[in-house]
Structure formats: structure tokens, C-alpha cells
Length: 548
Image 1 (cartoon, one colour):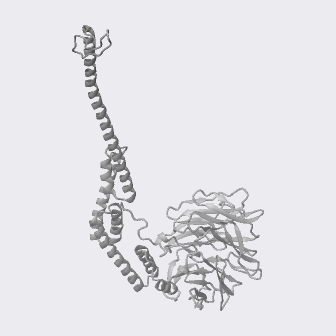
Image 2 (cartoon, one colour; image 1 turned 45 degrees about the vertical axis):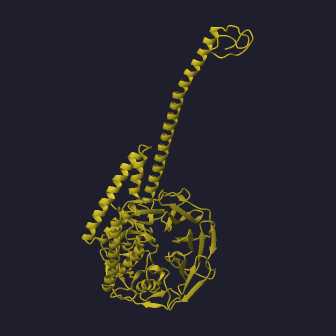
Image 3 (cartoon, one colour; image 1 turned 30 degrees about the vertical axis):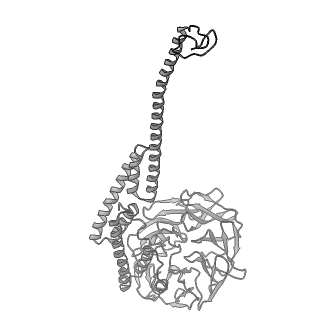
């Protein structure tokens, strides 16, 4: 308490000043007591406010931590979906709680897992029914989706062993029955299944001796082995000309021409055994068509006007399965499109564009059918183009003569790189090359010079092999399956054809004399497809799915 007389501080309970002895004012004592009481009351108010703040901070931290954990669980679930681990994805979506759409994702994933569990049951039934291929496809999908399912993995191993054995047995059976196409397909399917390359020597030997050739005799389509065995009639319902294998050799395309027809004929497709004859176009131009690499479509030269005699043509693309076809619209400066050739991926067609100013290369987008004409300087007289199956490179054949295959003079071959639009002459001025043919690998190509010498080149331009033929050959040469050899039709239709093995060395020439009967000769000789097949055609599971 403060003494107003001598300015001395005294204890709160003092009545007189300890300095001067004066009586102290009691009102100052009361005021001081009140201030101390008020301070104690404020202190008790601060404690609950602090506790409340601590509680709020704790709740906020718990909420943030829970959301962080849910977000992390959601991310782990999405990663599990990408890797196909549905069980882990379901568990992590459950931990994610109500974060974003975790609940919906968990429900959908549970439904997917249920479908795969049903697929496993179907696979077991398929195995019991000896439907091994279907069982393998089902179990592969289950194991990919449920990698922690030991039962599915064990069952898959059993199914794959059985299927491998079945393929091996089918190869043996097909060879025993001389079903050479079936034997070759089974060998390629086995390689695709195991992921290991086929026995190259065994496959080459089979193809060189037994891969069937096509030929026509008096309008009847037949096939025969290079060893002159296994001759059989494929089609005699309608007259056949210019047969052409599909890339997987499951189907054939051909023209049927009425007597006297010069420009147009009916284009048909038929199964390799002669069944399921389908008319593609009753007014197609008699010019080499082109199969797509997947054997699903065929491109050919069609008439812009069905009543026209052939002065204006364009490309038509037909879906072999549905029969539907589309015509490529002609650019304003193009009179006709001819000589279709597919790119290796099936996404484009190359063709010859005929214009009043001369010929050029046209590229057609197979999805939109839009035509582009890259500015590439080429000599006059372009008759045909052919696309490598393994590179954006074209073989261009020029000729001043009427034949689509051969020339005695005035012809040349050029390599055109579409990437940089470079043009490389392949032949010299003193040569008269036939229309070139790519090997299935898209690296080698072959042609005849004046029908007397076989030339084999590679697209890099390095190296050349030549072989003098024992007799004049026709320019319509074709490679054997896998590039094992080249078939050279005879210039004289009554003379033997020539088969030239292509391996470490070229030749020797094998003569193939075909029986004529009462016919005057054979024509339409072709060995392998003109288009390299898409490798997926031999993948036995390319179209299998868990819902099949």
C-alpha cells in the first residue's frame, strides 16, 4: 500500500506507514485487493481457451493425416490397377474410404475381379472339355489380373503344357497327312506361343519342298507342291485368272474374265480350299490387286464410272469379311489411280497417279482415304509401285511398253525413300528389268533382266546376286513363303517353270514341269503372297479374351 505523505510502499494489511507513522487510506487497500482478484479471475479464463486451441489443432492434424493416408492409398490403388493387381487395388480403395471416387472404384474393381474368378471356373471347364487353347487364353487373363492367385498360376502352367503338346502333335499329324499349309501354320503358331523362333532349317525345308503354288489351266484354278506332288483343284465353278494368295494364305483373290474382255473382269475372293466364294466387284480393272497385311481387306483398281471403259480409274478398298467397299476420291489433277500397294503397318496405300502432265506417286490414308502427292522427281512412264514391308521405301518400275510385268526395252527400277524423298536408280540404261518383287522381309527384292538373268538386291543398295536362267522367264516372278526361293514362270507357257532356292547361295535352278492334259499351257503361276503377312496372324491368342 502506498503512503501519500512520505511515498513509502507498505504491506497491504498495514494500517500505519512504517516510514512516517501516518495513518494509511483504507480505500487504497480495497482497490489493490480488487486488482489482484481480477488478475486471478483472468488467469482461470486463459486455461480453458488454451485447452480448446490445443484440441482444435489436434483434430485438424488428425483430419489432415487421415486425408493424406487416404490419398496415398488411392494412389496405390490406381497403381495396382495399372499393373493388373485387382486384389491389392480393392484393398487400397477400401483404405481410401470416401476420398474422391474410391468407393465407386472399389465396387467396379470388385466386379472385375468377380468376372476373372468366373473366367477361372470357365477355364477349368474348358480344360475338362479339352478346349485347351481357350483355357490358356482365359487363364492368362486371370493370372495377369490376379498375380497372387496361386491356383490360377498352377492351372495355367498345366494348360500351357497341354497346348504346347497339342501344337506339336498337330504339326506331326499335318505332315503325315501332307497338309502342308496346316503344318506350316502350326509351326508358326507354336513359335508365337512359346516366344521362341521356329526351327529355321525345318521350316525352310518344308516351304521349299511343299509350300503350294497356284496356277490356272483352261480357267481351272489348281495348286501343286514344288516337288510336283499334292496337285488338287481349288476352283472350277467360274473361269479363273490372276490368282493371288492372301498374306496368311487362308484366302485367294482372282479375276474371272469373260471371253473377249480386255480391261475389266469380276474380282472374287475364296477360301484356300475353294469354299465360300465371294464376289467383290463385277467390274474391276484387270490389274494386280493388293491384300492388306492382316488379310482383312483387298485394294484394287476400280472404275470411277461403272459405265466407263477404263479411261478413269481409282482405288477401291473392300472389306473381305463384310463385303463393303469404299472408293478413293480422285484429286482434281489426277485422271486415274492404279497399282495399289500397302505399307507394312496397313495404314497407307501407295499408288500411281496418272495426270495430264505425267505420272507421280500417290499416298492414300486407309482410314480417311485422303490422297497426298509428295513432291518427288521421277522419270516418265511410271507403271507400278511396291512398298517394302519393313521400311518407308518404295520400288518404282517405269516402262514404255504395255505389259504390267515385263519389258524388252525402255524399263527401269528406282528406290524411293519417303522419309527424305530421295530417288536412287537401281538399274542401268542397258538393262530392261521386269517389274520388281519385294521379298517378305522387305529388305531384298528381285527382278529379271530381259527375262534371262535373275537379279537379287537389297534396299540399302549394297551387294547384288545374279543367276543366269536356263530358259527365258516371264516377268511375273514371286517369292516363296519366308523368302526361301523365287518362282520364275516360263516365257513359253508350255515350258517348265523355274524355282530358284535363295539361301546362303543362289540356286541351283529346279525345273517344274506341270502336266497340261489337253490344255495348251498354264498361267497365273504364283508361289507366295505378294504382301508380307502381319506377324499377329500367327499368334493363336491375338483375338482371344476372357469373355470369349
